[in-house]
Amino acid sequence: MADSMSAGGAGDLLADSVPVDDFVTWTEWALARVGFRPSNCLALVDVCRDELMADFDEQVSEVWGRPFDIGSLAGLVFLGRTGLQAALSHVPGEDGRHRFAAFCFPHVGIDDDGTIGRVQRRGMSRASAACGALAAFRAELSEPRGEATLDVDDVEQSLLRMRLGALVPDGQVPSLLDLTELARQAAVSDVHRFVDLARGHEPVDVAYISGIVVHLPEGIDHVAAVQAEVVIDGVVIRLPH
Ligand SMILES: [Zn+2]
Image 1 (cartoon, rainbow, N blue to C red):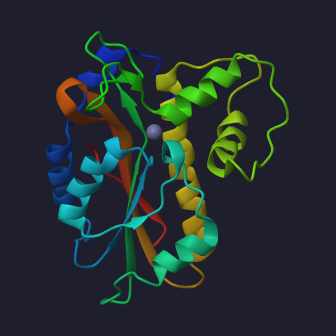
Image 2: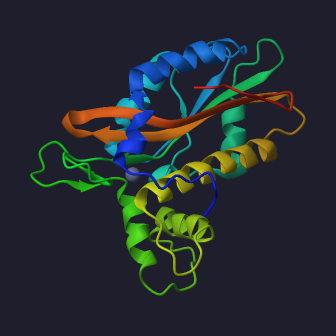
Image 3: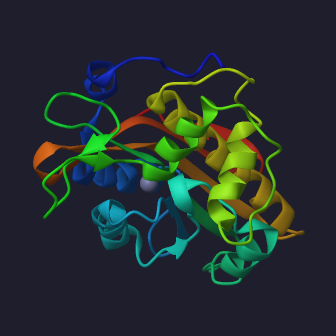
């Protein structure tokens, strides 16, 4: 496992978490300082398909405008070079530079008992899994592994199995939180790669903002483990959160 993976529990996760609206306000402030404004960049939002992520999506949209949606199950990113090229053709370029603000946010639930991976959903009497796709993948890791191949009847989950399976040593079953962090790292790394493949000769500056959305009881969402950096003309500038 990578050093940067934290194996902490619910307490560690929440220690540096903030409400989603505070986080979104921070992004507007932090990115303005490096020349990224809602009027001159396109938001790429990478979140899981789960309806629990709708609120996060809306709050980001309220500040950054309607986003180009790049997320698949578990917040992995499978749109590839062609998808990124499509997004690139929609980016404002008033000053000759194109700017993306990429938000990569896998998610995890915490229930009333502090159990990571469970969330109480509206209208359901029992807690269910979040992220369900990661929980399903994790359950498979306790079984002997076959060769991961593309399943045309289960495209995204089979791609998830191939992408994350390659990062988990045989015989290991990481915690759900560690898998969530692994999904974050994979998503950011894949967006980097797709942007580089799509950009051609055009100047494209990108803000990479990532973290984990934590669904707390009572329908409250927080954002934890935020990491942010911008790459402007190839120079990386970290944005401390
Ligand atoms: Zn999910």
